[in-house]
Length: 141
Image 1 (cartoon, one colour):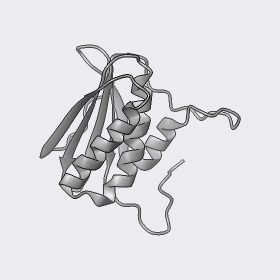
Image 2: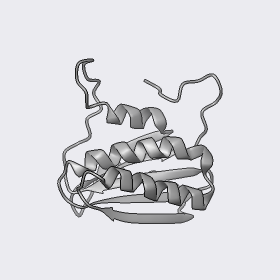
Image 3: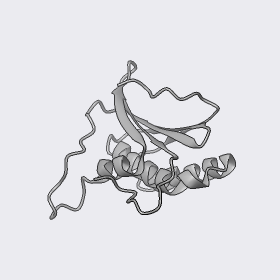
């Protein structure tokens, strides 16, 4: 799948280590970028998306990259890791405690997907920024 077509007005890129605190670092960097861009409506969903994608990328066991691109009131979140294992968004059984991260990404984003990269690895992306209207759930499951 190709990168979604949104014009790049501003971009932040960060390499992150495969360390247990990387997801929290990614959330902090996202808070800073979205505050700089004044994208308060996208913040909550973006933080959930970034934490889930960073947690998945850490499992590849190498440095991964977080990229945040602003276009208007949306933010494109991209996380690259060195693994070519495809993202798995299957529903898990109720007795499993993990494996629901991509369902959260799907529910908190206006669109998401992944692509294999020519240089190796894969990028998982999601777009956050359309506010949830009153009376609807932020999770579309």
